[in-house]
Image (cartoon, rainbow, N blue to C red; front, top):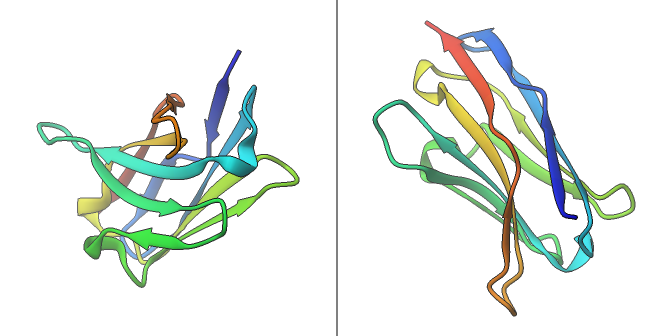
Length: 117
């Protein structure tokens, strides 16, 4: 059974920082591209950051220079360090595991991030 367990959301003031973590089980973590998505009220879910099995990263323009995605293949975890948070970063954040070769995709539960202005 695949599980992606997300932790670390919460309420923070604008300019502050939060760190999200996602612990995976039931998959061969090291072969999956790990992604963080977010969905704000009334908006479509959007890709925030991704990290490939080899460690290459990709970010949405809106978070470049503020967010950092990282992974620990030994611990089957992926993290999202979010700095200089803005009110517009307020959303439910989701962890996603994506296997390019098969198209297989698994979602973790969302975690609310609220940035007060």
